[in-house]
Length: 292
Ligand code: KIV
Figure 1 (cartoon, rainbow, N blue to C red):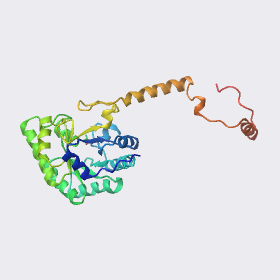
Figure 2 (cartoon, helix red, strand yellow; figure 1 turned 180 degrees about the horizontal axis):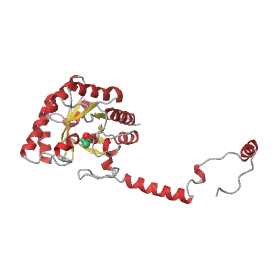
Figure 3 (cartoon, helix red, strand yellow; figure 1 turned 120 degrees about the vertical axis):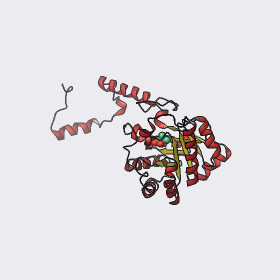
């Protein structure tokens, strides 16, 4: 693995005191997590976006707690040192403080997460308070909150009017007051993100909300061309792994079809005398030529 130190909450707060940006990424499985660990990323979110990027649904709503646990366990095996956050999926915390605490506890006990994330502002303050009282760190998520995509009217910029922006600023204050350890701002205007960051004492992470935050988050599949349906404008593409894989698969089909694969160095034989003995045991002559 790597010899870096395990990221802790004090280390994240130390970064904001020193003005060193926090790096954060979503991640869903072991091989991705292994690469993320090598890159030394601070915070890894096992996002319920896996409903779309991994499971192929059109939204995050069908994702279940058991799906999240399975993926969080795999991610933890790949990145033992990142600060790992489990994303509470739809309807695992909205109904009651009790459901919020119990499902957050599953991420900690079953997947060795360091904290959880939930969507929503003032209306979720009591959930945040309950989870934090159970000793579990919570990241809030404001702005474009995909679990409320229907009421938000689609995947679009939030807080464009002064009134809407004020609600996001008030929501951030309420989450911090309730004990959230950090807040993710997804797709809110740059100036609104800057204002919230200035006022907050906890790390503010931007996803498509500009540079005036304590850290940045991108979704792994958007960064590497691995989500075929669309790439949002906020997502910078750092490579096209999707094209590399597609080209490789095309070549594989061609080589199997033409007989170029497998090459002699990719398979194994037995000694001639063993093969002759095998034929004798089977009481059959050596096959000649190929099948029709
Ligand atoms: O599920 C997820 O990956 C998220 C990000 C969009 C922040 O919540």
